[in-house]
Image (cartoon, rainbow, N blue to C red; front, side):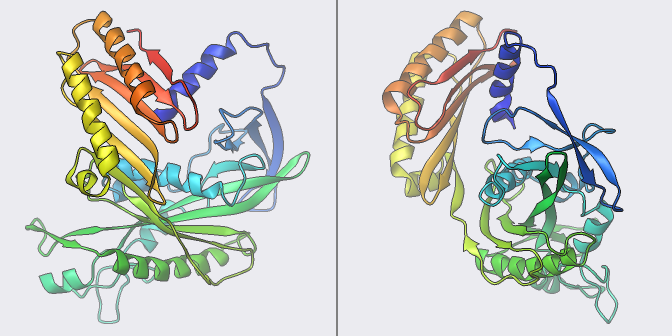
Length: 389
């Protein structure tokens, strides 16, 4: 989310110089979820870029939040996972629902009541805590530590996103749904209330097996909902990181099921990963980037006396670096130093980093963000902004 702030700011700045348009939005009609009546929906005529969907919002409420708004914050511990799930699901949805043709709306079918029901443990015949529709394994009353370990809570959240498409000049209809199952990589539990916390790691293979099984059940339940019988549904499986992790997790697999189909026939493996620099993993598995980041860190340290450290987060797809986000925390000693450091970092990017991947560098102090340098993949020169406080 923070990454697009400079783009938004630039758009606002340019808006002051642009010609006025009589109508900045487009009024369309769509069917309500509850009945077959039509209601007005608004879409902006312009998008920030081709990478983003134009949002579909309710005429009365302006912005119509998800029916399960807030659930993800309670279910997913790491905020980085929350951001990656939401933005990453949109990223993968673009391969199925073209942003030039589809409009976006937060999920309107999976309410908080439905999710609370599905995310619980399944109640068993002998009697246990849970619900009949719970997707997580059942657990007997008075379960032992070993029983907890053998029956972990795998699924923590189900994220829904809706996509609409024009049917004619004045109407839009629901034309696609994207779903992401958030699967735990680490299960935390307590045998006794207020007792000690225990941890159980969940392997990737076990997580995928359970996630694919749950995805089939979720698909069948969605097909049973009003108006979702013949809607294309994309489903992804997302692996969460531990709540203490400084990088988010990643998507493991995805599938798209065409309308009226209630069976998942095959899955496509997703090869994505976030890597922290510096780290043992980076040094062992990503030597070239690790060495480049170490050289960059040393150059900054030698140049700037109030330097604190450099932290990088690399995003890899199919084992190739796609984007690198770098944060440089400093002790603020004046605007002149900020300008000088930003210019120096700009030159380092130009001279030492190839442009086949994107790079974003943030200079931060205890007073907040001081400057921003962004270069998109394939571009020669970065965009630079120094904040005026």
